[in-house]
Image (cartoon, rainbow over all chains, first blue to last red):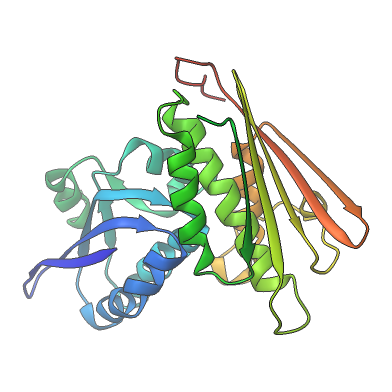
Amino acid sequence: MELKVIGDSRELLHLAIIGSLDIEGVQAIEAQFLGYASKAKKPAIVDMSGVSYLTSVGIRLLLNGSRTLEAGGARMVLYDLQDLVKDILKTAGLSGAFHIAPDKERALELIGGK
Amino acid sequence: MSNTLSLVLKNNVAELERLSGQVNVFFEGKGVPPHAVYATHIALEEMITNVIKYGYADAGAHDIAVTLALSPNHLDIRIEDDGREFDPLSAPEPDIDKPLEERRIGGLGIHLTRTMVQDMRYQRLNGKNILDMRVSYQADHAPKAS
């Protein structure tokens, strides 16, 4: 499991998560991911195309990150989710708990609140 | 190529990676649709994580027995442990509208499992929790969306 910083400008934090968001994956990136979320104070987009597997601990991590950012007045958008990952969120009834976009361009639009 | 997999894990989250690897090898070349493979991984990880994290009153080592049995259109999963008596079927559904911090510990994992498997049965026998689950699929076709 890997957390990559694609970009970190004054206006936007751009992250990518790669691998399985299971217990071990979450343990590998949790501190870093939540650290970024708590310090960012700006919108964030997260490339999810590399996430092949998502369990309840992964869902909790994403929710915690999203809420941490929102507490600082910013929004987090997940984009380019794999079909199985989208299915899991839908099954959990949590699709509406996240801002989700099909691609980076649409994610940037959502960040702008359009 | 065997259609049965049996293994014994220790009550340690590090064992989940070993389990995942063995399950992947088990599924190789068997033509099980991706959605059923995913459901199997989810069910095993969520249920065994709950056993490991919440099932024991002591800090000692315990065995968790896992069996997979593959049929042409379904996979049967059995998880057997000697932890505290716990019937996941009796756990109330999480209120998914509540903030995450207000939800019961483990509720989301059980909820995910319940929605991804087609049958789930629990029994307490000789001091052990025995959880049986079935993942159904259409051989050579993707399972129908529910």
